Length: 272
Image (tube, one colour):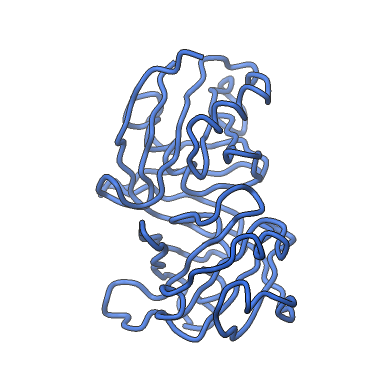
């Protein structure tokens, strides 16, 4: 069985967010969950995606699941992008692809420039008071906090500026107790002429990921948050600490379109 590592939300190797991708032969079901978890733990990236083809004529073309090294997640953008990239690079799919997932049917289509646009549900944002200990855990002054519990389960935390986001060195153990999935720190870009409108970093110790380099699903909340502030439906987000990437967002009511590139960096054989 071929296994690949794909860097997502980037057009060059060793940047963006790496994901493991396994295309399974069976059109009936996934292997046992315990095996999926063990493979994801062995790959030891933010997420490993497992996909198998579905019978023709249904509402989706492939079934897709995502696992961190410790748990299955309900939504993952970068590993979906990576899977769509592998499907098209190997010829396993042509044209738009529909994935059956725990978050419903998610679409992915490749553009003329090689960018892949994914169709995800838009996350709702509820303003909430900053939880006790959040500012201390982040080590930064908080401007506003919004909860996305009804969708992705993250706290979106606005900080005063881009420098504050880039300079974060949070207490991951303390953050683990403050959100059901993760904490997304964000701010407006210091210089929009730099090619992006807002910045973010995502911390997910509750699901075994201290920092996720470029989190596609987080942008289903960041897109409506900053689109409302800036008065534009199309934006570009810059995310990351040591590794970085760009996510182009387009708000379409209850759906958010996320666009990025991907590149395969490793391909090998899984013997387990």
